[in-house]
Image (cartoon, rainbow, N blue to C red; front, side):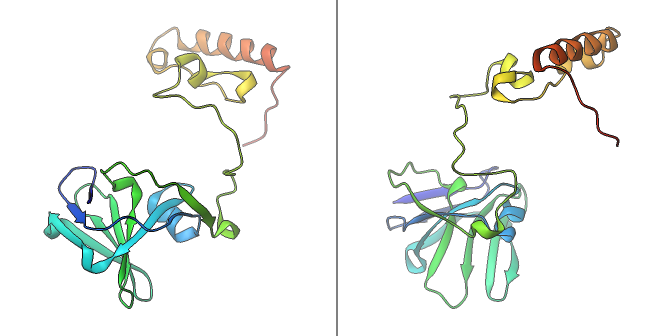
Length: 180
């Protein structure tokens, strides 16, 4: 059995079936709906799917003719999508609570993918948030500097910012400024 829920836990579901193929969809609608590079989905039989909590919290949006995206009206999590003429429901896997062993099978709608994302990129991985030095600046990883939040309100911030940027400039061989 699969279970899933929204961010605020107000809406929940169960599915008495194994998930279908996992797909990463890069279409513009999925990207904008989820605010991300793609949406990870899997289909399950409609007759095996049931809401267990919070059905009254659901809102829906018809993103294309006959396709409804259901989301929690309280926290905004997109939970499932369905086409009225199909016998399956698309689970948004970010809301799945049950661990699964299945792995994604494909990326689709790459013709509409975000310009800043390439699934072939090999990026550093961290079990949790990256170390502070990596989040703020690491030239070999190509990350840009961000002044730590604790310095922003400090009277020392301008001097620290200048020092910080001069250090970065030296580390990467100079800075180029583009007009705004």
